[in-house]
Image: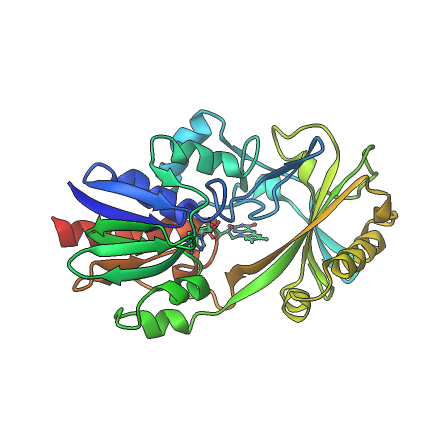
Length: 327
Ligand SMILES: Cc1cc2nc3c(=O)[nH]c(=O)nc-3n(C[C@H](O)[C@H](O)[C@H](O)COP(=O)(O)OP(=O)(O)OC[C@H]3O[C@@H](n4cnc5c(N)ncnc54)[C@H](O)[C@@H]3O)c2cc1C
């Protein structure tokens, strides 16, 4: 059986691995200690937060079909919070998510989808790949200098700016990928010892240093402890990614208080996470990036729209391109 290395265990990497393992000996390399990437859930002091993707939609038939078993076993469920649009600090209008296209979440956490996908896949966690070298076959080296060799194919599923650090300049889509920009985001996680009287459970926010504010504990299957998940705006993250994190956290807490009308500093748990590459700056749509002479490919949400469904679709496109190549 031919050997394939997939770098990254987000939704795109895991989906590809699941499909490819009938025809390839697949190894997934992941720098973090667990699978899921930006489908992320953090559990701290009895609080639980989805600090990456908040929810997702399913618009293509392929993604709808893919979700069916997850919906059947409850690992994916619909979330219909009271959703409002906020301008500055004022609620402008309420949307009716329960009556619109379904918004889905992983249950009990966003990373539950990844956990289920990761079953029966060989994943080398805590393994940051730092270089790729090809003689006859591919050789991968991790940050500790450990070598993994004899791979016929390598696929990167990393965010574009991280992929470009690994991919060789001879890769025929190198320049295209190099031009893809991704924006950052701060995720502020607040846990409370009592529920707050909220006018909404989820809000998109404009004209503010915040872009999203949700009652994380309102999602189905979460623990009962009351939690808020707040995202900064892209612009705020771009200007403050390297600033003192305590100051960033205090600023975002202050902005949160102004919106909810309650001193968010009274949270008994406060953490902040900075995502350097959260979303695409431009929602582009590219075909699969595959170089058939080099046996090298790249995919990820940034190829197709930059969301959870885009991560799936990019993996789907790459899988089909690879199937044509190896048929
Ligand atoms: C704060 C935030 C909010 C979001 N909100 C939404 C939302 O509401 N709805 C929505 O649809 N989408 C949302 N998204 C986007 C969504 O999370 C992504 O589109 C999707 O999860 C990307 O999946 P992926 O497999 O393409 O990449 P990733 O999940 O980023 O997977 C890449 C993996 O590669 C690993 N990695 C990186 N470098 C290396 C290396 N050198 N060696 C080994 N491993 C490496 C990473 O650790 C990661 O696990 C959000 C993202 C963020 C950050």
